[in-house]
Image (cartoon, rainbow, N blue to C red; front, top):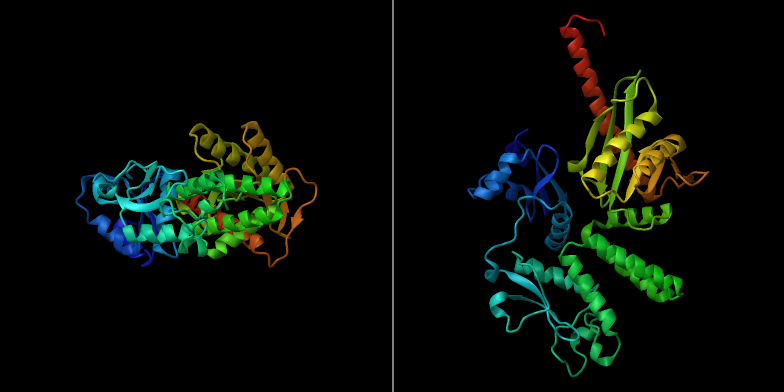
Length: 413
């Protein structure tokens, strides 16, 4: 299917889009209020840089967002994580708005263009192409990480009463805590969501260990709000519940699921599907034709796919998943664990056995059984079913090719 044909199938809604090459790597990531309209406009571009990108692109993928502000924040994060080749900084710096962090003892935060600045700031984030979306995003994030806008205020301003300013002059917040909040705000706009979430999880654990449960609960609420910036409300709840029930040390932003398909030992295949923020991320899906395992041996096939996939990711220094799920029970989990240990990789690992939907762990004798109505279990089931669909499709493709070759040569298969 050509890019023009793909464009006709895209949604007329807000989100982040990805032009990808034949290897599934992101060449360019952007945001749009209307994804379909934006992609069509790209296909008509005369800009040399984008024309070169389009000559290498074979597919367009996307992630839907509830608002343009959410798209702006998600775009920054995905650009930082994927480092697309054709995403470059804007050149006409002076005409675009920046997020300004001042050099004050308690830094102020505001939006300005370079021509409007009268003194050198501590940090400049940007430039951004949409001043309205930037302002709305900042207002949204200010509810999570309050900051000052007034220069040397004499008394508490309106923003203090609204909970949008910590009012450092009245001594309610230490400078260390205030600077930490400003650093967190900056991480949102620079796309450092994993670093941000990890630091908040560490702080929450420290507070809980010190029996400061009220403060730990507030940090937990902030963490949920931060995660909501990047995903829909349902996905937020599902992924957070998954972290809780599996006892993971961090939120599983990225989850891999491996599956095997074979019939009488012929045309054996494996696959890896990837969910990000609780939703399929098809650009990172991969298919594997089993090469080293004769006959039917699910455990050895799982081991081969794990070895090939994560050895390559290790050699290419590709970010590893936050959780690995294999389709199967304890034996499949053990096979995958041996390969990960052999590669020196510590990826959280579970298996989902289809018969009773039991969750197996490498270090536990008994599986975990979640209630059938549990949203975390539903997320794992969606992941497993998607892996099965993708693997089975590749298996049927290889089988059809073999049958066609046999018929062409006049052989009975």
